[in-house]
Image (tube, rainbow, N blue to C red; front, side):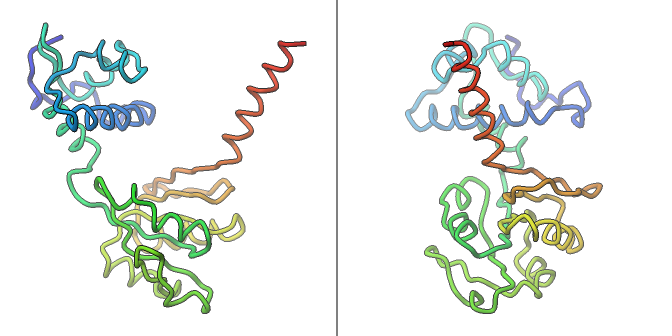
Amino acid sequence: MSNDRPGNSPTGDRETISELTTGRLSVYLRCLTFLESVGQSTVSSAELAERFHLNSAQIRKDLACFGEFGTRGVGYNVTRLRDHLVRELGLDRTRRVLIAGAGNLGMALADYAGFNDHGFEIAALVDNDPAKIGRRSRSGIEVLPWDELPSIIREHKVEIGIVAVNAEGAQTVYDAFADAGLNAVLNFAPTQLRSRPGVKVKSVDLRINLESLSFHLKNVEDGER
């Protein structure tokens, strides 16, 4: 490993860094956060890989996209590398999130502690059902009127929108988010959205993952015959 120089800029174009790479950075960040919590000051890529079931060569390759961090014979400074990953992932500031859909899923997401820690904050819930307006989640997030979405986004300084409605209403919600100026959307509806340029959408489809697991089980079963 090279000398520890966390201020170095990556040599490649940042736009070419894949989503798989940034996804792994999130994993590395969780690992480093744990190591910091137990008081470990340094860690090698080999130890990081062995302890958290990762790939040491992949770790070194991914981190090289963002500069040089390790010291030969010593490894990575846990706190310094963790802080750098926090900055690279844009988590050194709070990102405010709005959830569209105050049904069971939306309410559960509003109360999920993982959203309200580590750089994210649920700022508001919106719904178009008059019976739900004014209700609050267990954590105290109030359900606001859907037709006030643009002003709610402005007033609460929302940066990320979450689609927690049914498949039929998901595209309408995404388009409304885009029209209101949001550039990042997390979609929980079981449908493929038509995205717009500059408005990033990430989908979480539980059924797709279950079907992938079913495919795995089918292969196992076929192999046992």
